[in-house]
Length: 194
Image 1 (cartoon, rainbow, N blue to C red):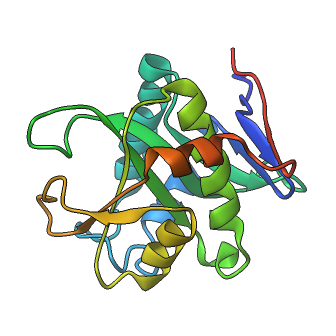
Image 2 (image 1 turned 135 degrees about the horizontal axis):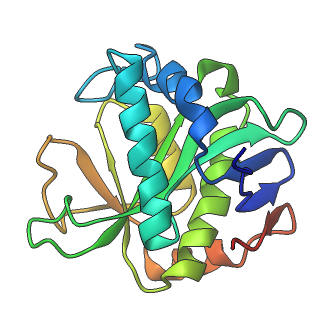
């Protein structure tokens, strides 16, 4: 059995590298119409789509040493209820320059409790330690007020650096805010990854 690799710990959360056992959780979160209300592609339609997305998340970690994390509570580390992190991508900018894309999606059971903020804070700190000068962007549907609010709270600002192909708004994390995110509070404890 492949061990789960913890990448950080917060007061309440245990973000880990995506694990082959996470396929059901990937589909549960990404196949839910409620969690995908603002997704231009809508919810996943099959468990196979979840398996494919999980495969790409695992490959990101193997290739780049960073990517989206599976998120569970410290009290129940086997129950993944969300995904958050940054992925190195060249698909967002028209010039193909790499950026970190911030991503977060959680099951409704996690909503309204500050868990997404906790996960975003620790994954942004991980991104800054991994590639300190890489720009971090978030692409968010204009109607997605909760995601826009969270992005603003962690320091993202609206940007016109490029236009998203799917019509979403672009937000950029200024380098100064990124530096503050990487000096995480005592509630955020990064762990070493092999």
